Length: 374
Ligand code: ADP
Ligand code: MG
Image (cartoon, rainbow, N blue to C red):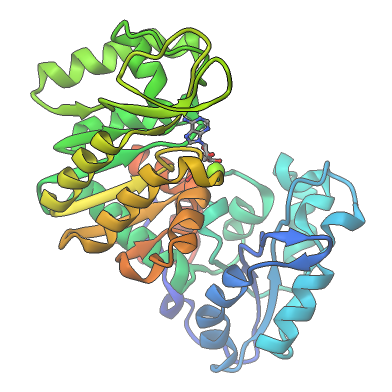
């Protein structure tokens, strides 16, 4: 039998206890220097909640994708230095992924992690969709809890899934098409309409029979898109797709197109008419979830669609939630990060939580010995 997800108060008295806090310190780095310490600062409320009550805190995180062995490029040294200035006296273990046991969820690695540890706190939402050792291992033996950051994510995202104010619109874009099609299916069950831009839109446009030139698309997903379009029509839910596009023509020149791309052309952004239409849908909604940029916004020529959608997210009266690393980066680039209600710290995890209503990391916490029973 499992209970509710335990929160920090469910740990009981933490004074004098050694608490392992799984954080998401997977910060962006350039040449060994942290370019944005948002993820370190985001962990501070949980850390100070614990240290303020007399606990000793040992943090642990992964950083980048080392191949299960120590690799100086991915050492936690810079993070440890920054953490020492923000939360003096708090320890940080070396990159969890330096040990192959982390991703393999090896029980020997879990045992090493929890040695001399009294309690476990998970505050790493961005890693909760992975059944890795540091996420699902410690709650098997230790009193455990979700940290404040994780709790906020769960409240907001499960709120979207279970009880959204309507109309509820999901805006999807970006380039991880097959990753995100599963969530389209799940979202169709809960949203009132879907807005699709980014590289994602070309597989849908191809499914409708439009020529898409040399744009990014996944041929083996065309049938899935056809089915999703049919299913949405059957239940009376609209999938809004672009009506104009911006990109490069076969000669590599910047061009605006209708919804049919000529041979050799590549679509890199939604067009101005589409951006305005998408913006209207967002303005009329009462709940909006946005994941994935509308175009290749890193290139100035193709940022307009994403900027218009970001501005609508900022302006609408709807409850607004943004998930996805690149979507959050786009919002920040436009100076609008503070104008939405919630920016999720996990892209894949946010999508999976909305899709499935649960994550391996949350299930592990519910199974902990101190989880409150219903
Ligand atoms: P997120 O991190 O928000 O979940 P993704 O990682 O799925 O988003 O996708 C982000 C990437 O998608 C960006 O780097 C952006 O340049 C790219 N992208 C968006 N639209 C297009 C397009 N039409 N063609 C190529 N790349 C695109
Ligand atoms: Mg991304």
